[in-house]
Length: 431
Image (cartoon, rainbow, N blue to C red; front, side, top):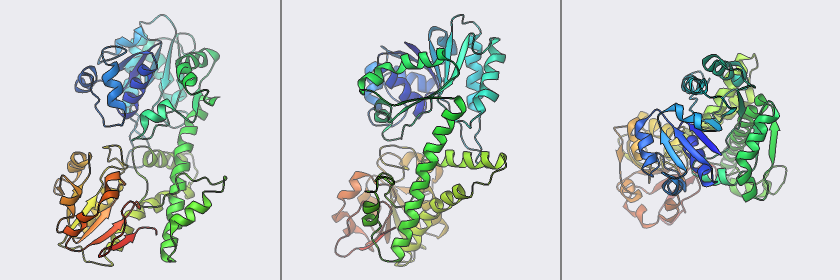
């Protein structure tokens, strides 16, 4: 099939490259000329394991990029993969998505054969029917259902494993009105289904499909906050929370995944989607008390790290190492990173911060320009009076002699990645 993808961020670039790898002809459309040139040169604008290889393989062949939305007229399906960032009140900002939708509508005005528009962007249920579809009709001068269809196909890609998640999904969710749209989605994903020996496909309404996306992320965020709450209690009672988690994870009703207690969740999805659903619930007249608690527990974990550190040393005026800045290993994304809260709190307490991350230092430097960013964990630890481990990069598990360079070997581990050793004062956040 001929496919166009509007938006070349984390989701859009991954979707475009993976669809090309499945054999489709893909056109990535973005208003940023630098991103377009990067993709056409065979490089990726983002750091994501496995993505660079796909872009390099297919650029100039089955994958092309352009700033011209008119290119979608030569395609059968257009994905809308534009950001819907959070406002201050937690609600989502539809500005970029609506602008992209308007561009798509203008291109559809001169297209005669049926075209399917697929919403990949995460939006509150009802947004497609109440905002996006009417906008497409207004701009294109065409009626939905006749000349074009609008479907919802939420993504369940985790940063750091987005390519693997796309190519081997747990499920595919198709939210559509009418068989025509469903048939086109079936055809589009047929190679993926065949490669995986069959994937569960959920065919549902558009509102339901979007709610599946929110429910998926909010449920996982809640599970993490619950194990963190339990982990905090375990710490107070001198109990190893990981032994507890291993045991309860054997209960098939609970499951073993997402039971690693620690400094909490971040990223572009869990915080945004949880806040958006809370804000939408309040607008609808419902107080989401449990979701409020999920967020409160998560936001409290970084401060607990500093409180544990200050049981052993005063941070004011002293060098403190922060190991890990990305919100999770395998990505350079700092959105929602627990490290931002850790650094902010350290600076408020008068500490001098030395920070290290394999790939995310440049991004964090834009947020905290006065922090010292170093090229290795050893450089961060040198002469430090304490260290906070915030991201569980594999290289931190191999640290040993590097701690000898610390002024005080006090380590607070937020991810259970560092091994304690003789001469070290070691505090696990929840164990």
